[in-house]
Picture 1: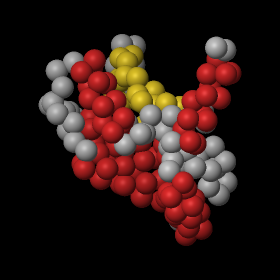
Picture 2: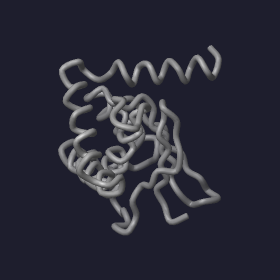
Picture 3: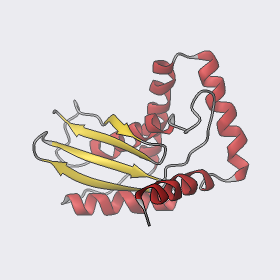
Picture 4: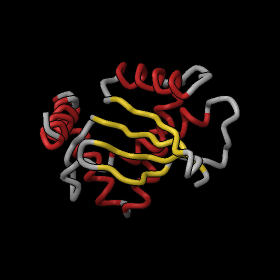
Length: 157
């Protein structure tokens, strides 16, 4: 499988992973938020929704990055929200979270469904903030992505 084919497959799975009963609702919700809020306010609201979702699906304390990744992926699988790969960037002294196959609904000006990244920032912020020794001053921040992946960093770097 080529990288392009792999990217298309993940993108397809992300679109397919949203139940038909929710597609119209999510599109209307995002378009309504876009019509009434600027992008920063909309993303702040979606981040809060993601944090609330993380609170509804708390993770147990994890002793290693491998265990943290496993627990996150178990929770994500339970709601069909794709998967995450967690790695450590020793140069930047941060965690890198690469989320693939998040639910994707084109809405408004975002044909690639990129609005979901704000929800993921809140979700991972709640999960990481709930781990032993977490620094309350840190939160994941979006640093990149494609229509099929969202990349977040969690750290001071």
